[in-house]
Image (tube, rainbow, N blue to C red; front, side, top):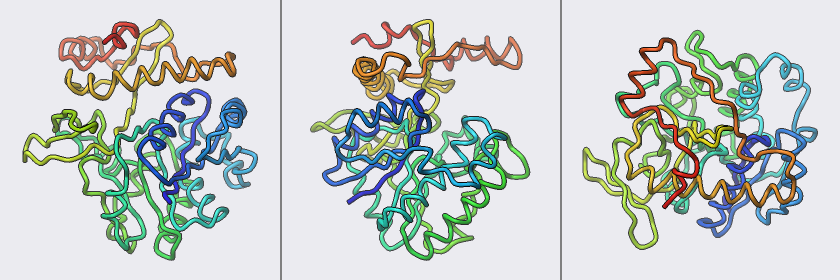
Length: 328
């Protein structure tokens, strides 16, 4: 049994449902503990009656420590602050042997069995960003990405997890300060600070816009296979992190500000966007009072007009009309 947890509100609702469905496609035996971060997402999740999921409300989850600092943090900062607490909540209340936190905008293409197999007897597993050099933000965002983090319910796992929760309660903000950034840079020295910490080695785990330039992809026997350009090493794609994908209210879509090949867009982004659109249609049949894709107004946020022009002409300004991008 693989035990996972995730958190999202109504703005990320379709992504959270897509994550669940992807796990259902590739895992024979799993359970996803979903922390509903607003009442609307809680209500609709309860109506969906997902077979392999448990919905946990904020009322059940939030303790006095979290509630006391909630007013001082933005929505994003509060979600980051809460990540470690969601894992601890599952381990303590459901007595499972291990729990893996997943960002809601992950999507699985193959079973994560190989990831857990390589963990062996270790108590914690973390994932590197594996930045493409031109996008290396390790000094600002950390070496490791809080996207897929596993803790076993043992002494070593709980020691690291409780330490992480305490640090996030103390400081967890959307800025770089004294070697900290959100909940993420706390992980940078775990391999030396704690016992039993394993760094994921499988290249198929943790693919994202910040590292995908290092690989080529193709489909074979119903799977997506990646090949590392530098070494020629091939691997099955396990999961992709659709970080920064945004739906905009003028019927457009932004994929972020990093170079993405047409191959990557065709294999990953187009099917994922179509899936989110289909989920949106089904969710709005249940409750049409909100947009489960979380569409937002577009705001140009460049420091200078020259930077805007540079990105535009260097193909890192990935904005598309939604109907054009979804077209075969």
